[in-house]
Amino acid sequence: MKKATILTAAFLTAAFLAPTRARAVDPPAAPPAAPPAAPSAAPPAAPPAAAAPTTPPSLEDGLKLWNEKKNKCAQCHGADGKGETKMGKSKNVSSMATVEFQKKYTDQQMIDAIMKGFEREEGGKKVKMEPLKNATERDAQALVLVVRSFAPKDAPK
Image (tube, rainbow, N blue to C red; front, side, top):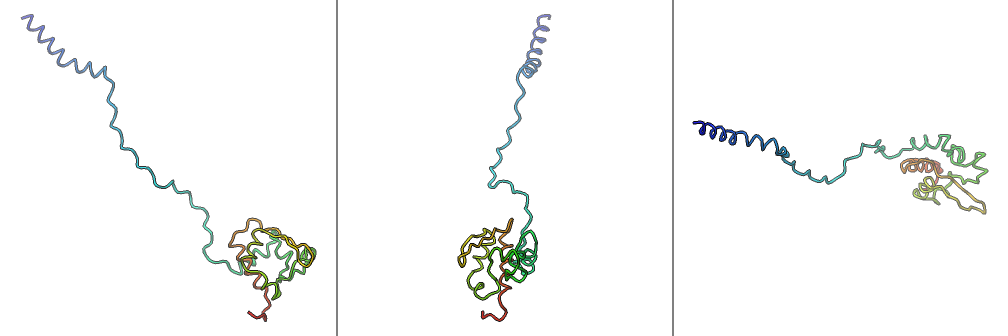
């Protein structure tokens, strides 16, 4: 009977303890892998920038820019665009209040002059204008409205 008890004890030990020992020795099973993330079609959106005005520029917008001292528009060209200021005379600026000036330059040429500046010779004299610092296309368009407002009122269209 002793033999049977020993066999039964050996059997029970082998049957129940062996798996426990194997689990203690075996490393824990890795958790199931998560499915790979689908590649993103677009990079994450940047935070929205300050929205530019969506309305077209107005004469009022242009006049604000024209009269700001830092921009020097009125200081050089005058409030009436005739260029009869001390600075305008020293720089030999043309009067914008003539039919000839209004016909000579397209809106795009004026926008380019405002945005990029220019240097040229007129009537044997050098004429130079610095670009408007930090100007946007909309600012330049607004200033063109101001320049166009200087056209003689009785000028043929």
